[in-house]
Image (cartoon, rainbow, N blue to C red; front, side, top):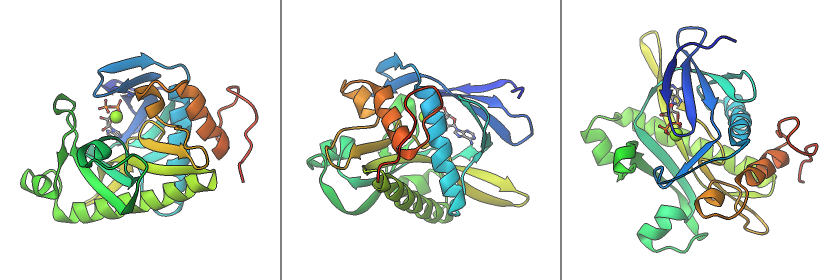
Length: 251
Ligand SMILES: Nc1ncnc2c1ncn2[C@@H]1O[C@H](COP(=O)(O)OP(=O)(O)O)[C@@H](O)[C@H]1O
Ligand SMILES: [Mg+2]
């Protein structure tokens, strides 16, 4: 499929104009960045794995009635999505303490939280994506109260879906981040899950051993990132052809 002009190149993906108005081709790069791009590397095969995994999760969400931007996967590295106006927030859902929450509040990593906690960060690399409250979001007009109600609902539904899917293959969903986009349908606007859902944007720990199967492997130099992501893909049965043994589902 012929893709159009490059629209944007980010840290992990490139966006191109899609074949029809209102569509975008999302190209998944092999680049890995962490700590606001202070740490960088190119990791062979990461893009293809994230393309596959994000497809898998977005299709599942669409099936259970959670709207997403996903239309279809085009090839190993590209997927066609609906073009959205991205709300400038990183929506984080946490089930267990880890990462910045553990640091900020002095809670040991891995402590189960009394209930899922949703946090919002203002999406701005130059500021390091700072944590903001709903007061900031309302006052600066990043999203309306109605949007925030919808975003909370979407975030919790994605959390239930992802937690269940991961639990089914012996993985604990510690936390994740999503981005939400607005799509316009005539006079109406609707919010959809956009960007990607992948081990780049989730914390995934093996249920039995606690082994990390997400971007912390790269952040904390814990071994091969592609091996970790391929393990998640293998367990889900979405391993791309030619990158390893035939998928077997863990019971
Ligand atoms: N459906 C969509 N429509 C428009 N923009 C999108 C869509 N999905 C994701 N994006 C944006 O595309 C970019 C994806 O590239 P990425 O490498 O993740 O960028 P960044 O370095 O900004 O995180 C992000 O800025 C994200 O907000
Ligand atoms: Mg991104």
